Image 1 (tube, rainbow, N blue to C red):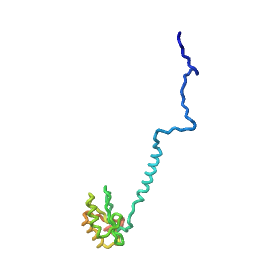
Image 2: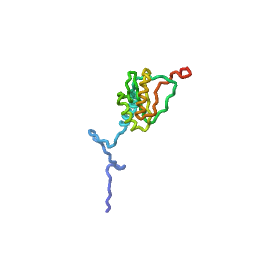
Image 3: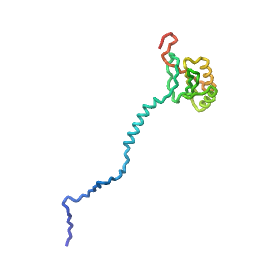
Image 4: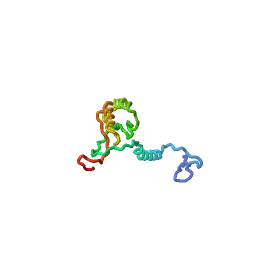
Amino acid sequence: MAASVVKSGGGGGSRRRRRRRSGGTQPMSEINVTPFVDVMLVLLIIFMVAAPLLTVGVPVELPKTAAQALPQETEEPLTVTIAADGSILLQSTEISRDDLVPRLRAIAAERSDDRVYLRADGVVPYEEVAQVMGALNAGGFSSIGLVTDIGGPALNGTDQ
């Protein structure tokens, strides 16, 4: 006698289907990075727009000359500014005349470049500019660049 197995439920085989419960949700096991990337791109755009606006400067009326601009450097340039009222600023920090040389020596010890840019208002007497240039030299900076605006008169009498 042979036993035979009969399948119930039709000829196509039975498929097991899992149905989710209508009331419950399963936690997703994948990390969705799309919102994170969207937020990072928005922040990148905000910083790209806002970064040039963060540059704070001291209002100085620079004298105009016919000289061309110097090429850009890899290290942030050190700038000393003499304002119209005679105050001295190292980068954007006001500093007293007595503290200028010691601070410059400390900065010169940390920097690889001995170049410094001197910005002086056009109404500042030449004597004060020369004194600050001497302090820059005593502070360890032998390469002093004088910052001017372009478009002033040339030596041949023409305006450029």
